[in-house]
Length: 69
Image 1 (cartoon, one colour):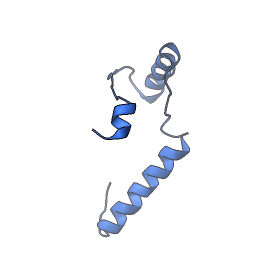
Image 2: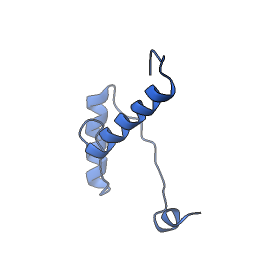
Image 3: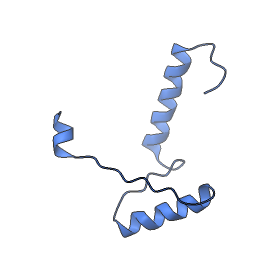
Image 4: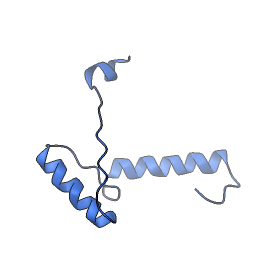
């Protein structure tokens, strides 16, 4: 166990709800308010977007002939 694990224990609850992204997003927004959780939106979170971009650069560097990710 490293220091960050000891200081910030992690737990998760999987909630599957909604027939599409919009319905699911409404449920997430509602739950985040009810449980005082931070909602990390897939398209509006700069650190997440930067991380995904970095991951794609690593894939392209490691697999230059990749066709699909």
